[in-house]
Figure 1 (cartoon, rainbow, N blue to C red):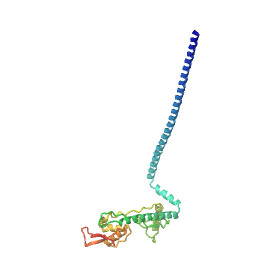
Figure 2: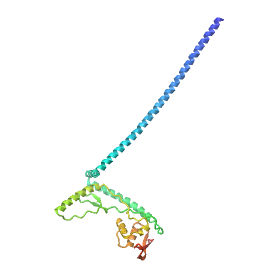
Figure 3: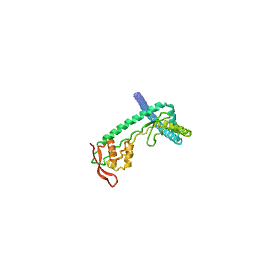
Figure 4: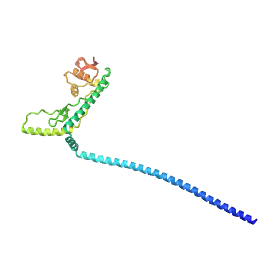
Length: 279
């Protein structure tokens, strides 16, 4: 009996030892799985952190480039502002490297393109002006662009330069004394230098500052302003206020003509007029 109890006790001890060992192995497996999960999580965090670092580097690089660019642009602008003749010298250097014939052709092409654009704009303006109703003197008039300046060919280098009201045509060549010839040569050299820089610049056409906003304002123009308005659009004055007004209305395609109400001028000194439909 004692022997049997001893054997049962030994078996119980063996079972207990195995149970303890199985518990240790189970805990070890759970720990290994937890360690692996933690390692995977750390790897994922490292990957996210690396992506964030690269993104932050890119943002810092962009900010730095913008600041450097802004600083350099400021330095360049200041340098150009301090050297007022830099632009002219650069233009002269460029012009000296390009054949005169090519510059002339380039300028003619630009003038032709501007002429086409101006014609399209004025055609649309005339189309809108044709829809103006006579019973509304305050209906806006669409302004037309003034004609392009007629090009001149420089006698010194053959370049084409514009003639504007602020820049009259050069005087004709006449016999001169030696002193005058020296002065003329100096002026010609200056003109050639200016034309080489001006050949790149074409002033865009604009409406006249005197263009009336509506028929009421047009009727109130004084004679001097009316003559200047005709001159701006290269319309010949007939020295008759009513004829000049009607010529301008026809030019801008407003479907009305001016007719006098009476031969006696009004309080403003101008003849009283009404707008009637043009036939």
